[in-house]
Length: 310
Image (cartoon, rainbow, N blue to C red; front, side, top):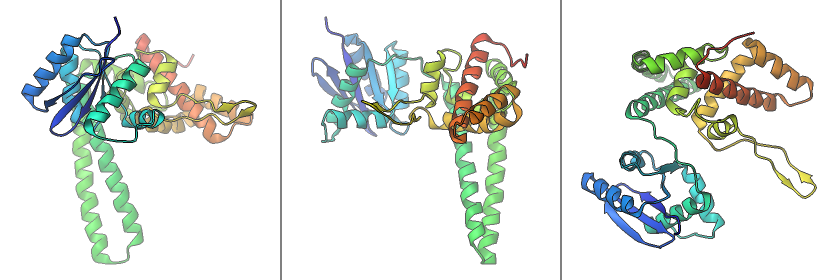
């Protein structure tokens, strides 16, 4: 019997569902009754895999409901779906077509389902994301301030910055309460922060955005963070390796950690200097440090042992 793959296109008001290889398709409303119906109909199919496209948070409730029904669910990056649609020559775009493309993608890739973050982890991720947005707004206001000469506008920006600073302090307190109030998260934060180069902000970003840390191998966790190198080669031609994809916020956090670690972490400082001495460009060396840092953090959480210099 053929394995069954389900693709779901999530929109504001409905779920478009496509099934492969049967070609079955149906639509349910995006409400409480629709979620129950969606889970029941898909469960009756006994699918090998159910794939949803990340759509600005609309998919979260559906993914949680399907996971709660013990269905194998994966949420994928829309960029992957668009690239796949382009590869198979599917240029038309409607909700039913998108669902069919997602189902085809599920059948072609056969991704491995992973446990979804629990509600507390999702809430922490939202707090961390909001903190990042506040910092971006503060950076934008400071850049505007440098370009202005009008005193009244400068005062306006100063007032806005004070308000954003208060909001940032409030968010930091909420994040601290969430992390330090959970014995599991507190232990994880202490383990991660034991590594020179990892402070509370990076540790909490990893807890919120990379809950798989410590559960995957080094190659899998590097790919998830977007730090796995991709090789470009054709015949005799060899291009430079590059990184991409994965979780951008995690990759950025690890990059910042690598910048600190190459100065203050004795192991990673020696690793960075060795790469540069061997002729590697500094940016390539920093990315290598970030990847090695992630490998170390993954092992620390896996083994439940803090950083040791010896």
